[in-house]
Image (cartoon, rainbow, N blue to C red):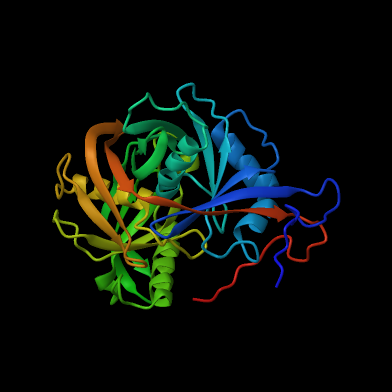
Length: 356
């Protein structure tokens, strides 16, 4: 069969039809779709104002990009924007199956590689083995450190979080169908509820995904109705992102500890969850189970992929005793694509399959 030698870059389409160009990556199995071109301008003088604009005016476009048939129920996205912070290299908004998050650790790890390799940040000095990338996320400034050689990324990325803290520990929450459940709530750029899966009769590495998702979703809904969250810097950040089920092995150990994160609209994180690791370290530090500069390994119950995390500095976040956490992991490139956004597309808002 003769190979076609000339293929147009895009199929025929009407002039003026929007085209979104994206680059896909993954970190520990968790996808990140980075928008390269085609996204409309967003009003707002601050990053949080731009986030509100996306939610209020551009949600159909988010759905087209994240959901089927162009994406899937667990797709994640990133929009790179200008930041109002003078020290930031870039601002970033994160997209998922329900809306826009305040932080995404696996996304920061992937973006560290991307912005360095594509020249969106100043190159490191000749001979440098690590480049610094300052990303302004909705939760605040996050600093990534990208292992590099010859000015290009070559290995793991690590980042230092915004101040992370324990909001509440050993809360008793009444979860329909589960009874009284002991819950911790930690903040790592986003708020998560943490529950030992064994208390729900589950194992984060061997139970059926549907059972884990159903249990985590029930906990999330119960916490939302029974617990009022508070963030001292901005109440716009005071929402529960999801629930992380753990193996209960919170005391420091050289052995990996496993968890699985269910967030947004029953979305499952394939990675150990960067902001979740941050919040979990903050809880462990609060309880005296880990010391500064002790490194723990966290395993995804979904894929077995690994991140490391360690508390590196005590700090404050309003009235809360907080800690800066370093998270490390490996991100990979997977491909690029162009999406034509035709108005007559009957699935222009995407759809979400509820099948696990």
